[in-house]
Structures are given as C-alpha cells and as structure tokens.
Image 1: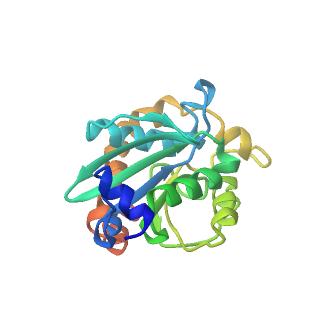
Image 2: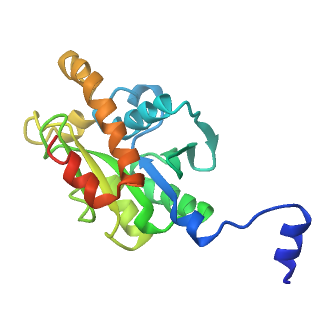
Length: 209
C-alpha cells in the first residue's frame, strides 16, 4: 500500500472507480460574469444551467474559477460549471475542473450561443471548429483539441454588418424573452439526455428542435 492509499484508508476517503468516473459529466455554460451581462444573448449558457439547477433542486456555489453545482440523475453525476473567467478565457476553468473531477473529454458538454442558427434552435455536435466564438476558441487552445461535444443554442443573426459584438452582448427582446420560457426547459432536457442517453441519441432527439 502506498502512502496516498494509506491516508485514504485512514480517513475513510474512497477513490472513485473507473466505472464511477465514466458516469460523471461536466456541463459548462459559457457566459460573462456580472449583472450587466445577465440577460444578454452571449450568456445563454449561464441561463440554461440556471434552468437545470432549478429543475433538479441543486445550488450553485462559488468555487475556484467559477460557480459550480452538482446533482445526480438516473445514476449519473452532473457537475455544472459557469466559469468566472469571462468568455474569452473559458478554457482555463474547463481544464481545471476536468482535471479536478477526473472527467474525460468524452463526458464534457459546452453550451454556447450561435449567431449562425435561428433563434431558439438547438444543435448538438460531437466536435467542430470554434466558428469565430472566442469562448470555444480558448477552450480549444487550452485542451489542445476540437474533439469535445458542444451544444449550440441559436440566437439568430438579426444585426447589421460589423455589429455582431453589440448584438450578442445585447439583451433579449421582449418576444425572445417570452419564447425562452418554452425553450429553456427543452434545453435543460438536452443536458440530462447527454449523460443518460448518450451523445448520438441526444443529437437525434433534439437537433433542429
């Protein structure tokens, strides 16, 4: 028995088995911290995680590099992360919590906004480029791979040339806000489906919905 194992046994600390680790999922909602960003399109990742937390009676706690919540559902453990690093440095928080919780890259899902998709439309993908999204770009650089699942929530592209930043950092319209009431519960189901039904089934069930 090595020293680490000795102390774990002494204090009753259990090491997670490989099977237990395979049932852990890191769900990261991208956004910017601060009240002025709360209702902006760029913060849809935060908003979807807030919906998940409410539905599963979980609570966010401020931890290193972000707010973190967790819950169990159908034998799976879901760890939800809202990075506090601001959008453009999201990769630092993702990498830290992947290592902290020993979660493999196959079990992470990144939630982000997408101006190239109609408002409210869901698109889950197994991999892909950053597509000009600075949050995804930083995650790709920090993890040194594009091979991670992402959940893109369409925010539409109703902006004039050169005004994309203003659009994504702008607040939802009244019409969009009313439609989000229906879209958020559906988006929350994407999260639990990813952990319980798998990526392929989740894509088949929700893409384009």
